Amino acid sequence: MSFSITTWNINSVRLRLPIVQQFIARARPDILCLQEIKCREPEFPFEPLKEMGYSHIILHGQKGYHGVAILSKVPLLEDHRQDYCGVGDARHISAIFERGGRRIRLHNFYVPAGGDEPDRGINPKFGHKLDFVEEMKALRADLPGTSSILVGDLNIAPLEHDVWSHRQMLKIVSHTPVETEGLLEVMRQGGWLDLMRQHVPASEKLYTWWSYRAKDWEAADRGRRLDHVWSSSDLGPLLESIEVLKEARGWERPSDHVPVTATFRF
Image 1 (cartoon, one colour):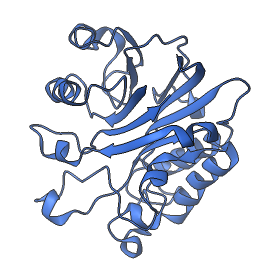
Image 2 (cartoon, helix red, strand yellow):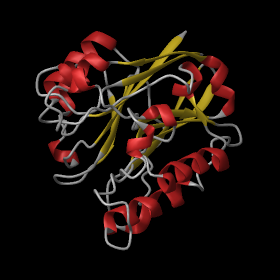
Image 3 (tube, helix red, strand yellow):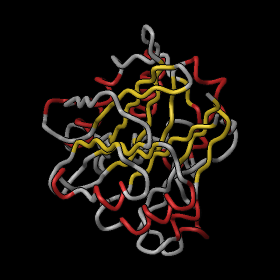
């Protein structure tokens, strides 16, 4: 049986509810993980989304900033939030679901963007990002009796072809060596598989984000792969497909990120 999980930085779920509904009507993922929902729990649009089949919703919200949510058609057995860096930001939520006789821990992350200057000495936002990634190194994929999936806007494009120009991006936040090496170390230490690059070779360009600043984002195509889908080693062979819905960047009032859907055969 196929089972799909989508990750999408929606950049305000209330503002962009129409395109969330448009996407759901088209793709119908079993689980939808949203980042940067920009609202607290009482303001979240539960009813319209429950009407579309997502009867199990958990979220970690914050007024006007950040925020992550998991919308699921299957029961979620846990609601766990971790306060990375201890600053009170709503940037992580996880739950357990069961499928195909497996118990699976699902993490949904929104890693700090890090500001514009890649120097923690003059830019505290960049320091916060590096500290956040450092704490993520403790996260293990292979747990006793439990598989793992990690999704989200990690705000780092770690590989050469995750950006439109490796050479020109080396001093740009999201692709600096200290960030990329840090995120790759999170994967190595935690035993995580990069499922997107399992499906699309690392030698091929792969983007999930296109800047609002571009006058014609599609023609310029200066993208970055900031959104990720990882798993524990046992789930790698069960991956059927990865879809990056690039056309969503051109929808009405779009997010600058697009949905990424992983489909498994459990």
